[in-house]
Length: 284
Image (cartoon, rainbow, N blue to C red; front, side):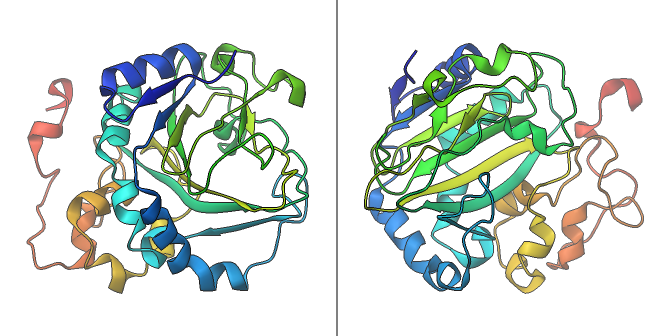
C-alpha cells in the first residue's frame, strides 16, 4: 500500500485521522525549499566536522547533526509549524503535554545501504507500549527531493497495529517519495527505515520528533541549547523544548516553580503548582 499524500491546506483532523489509519502520511508543499537551503547553510560547519556512522543503523555513508534550535535559527519556524503541532495535539490528545524528542538533519550519501526497519518508540528501552497507545508524533522534512533511488524513507503502511519486534524485508516496505518542502508525518509505532541511496546525490532530511512529556528526550534539549541561547527564545518554543511540567507534578524546579523560571527571564516564579487551571479536577 503506497503512502498517502495530502496538500498543505489539509485540516489537522484529516491528518490525524490518516495517521490513526495508516501510521504515516505525506503533506506536500508545507514549507518552502528556500527555508531548508538556509538550514543546510547554517549547519554546514557542523556537517563538515562530523563523521559518518559506524554501523548499518547509523549508516556508514550517512552524516547526522543535531541541536538544531541552537545551531539553525531558520529551523525554528519549521519545528513550530502550525499544522504539525495541531496534528500532534490530536495524536497525543490524552497527554497533559508533549515536548521535542529530538532535532536532527540526516544526510544519506551515495552508496548507503538500507537502514534496518524499526520503530522509533524502541528508543524507550524497547518498552512494550499497549497497542493503539501512541507516545510520539514524528516528522521527516524533505530538504531535497526524496526518491526511491536516493534513499527515500521506507515505511510499512499500517504497521502501527502489528506486533512488537516484528521483522520486515525491504520488499515489504514502500518509499515515502516527496518533493523538497514536503513532510512525512508518522507515529512512533510505525515500522520504517532509511532507504538505500543508489544515486549520485546526497539525500537531506530534517527529523523532528515530539513525544509525551513524561518520557525522556532522546536529544537533551537543556544541554543541546546553551542557556545563553535559550534565554532569548520565545516562550512557546521553550515550552516545546521541555521548559514546562510534563504532567501535574513532573519536572518542576526547587519550590514547585515552573521550570521556565530557571532561565531567569525577569518574570516572577509562582509557588505551589502555579496555574491551577491546568490541574485535573480530581486532585485540586
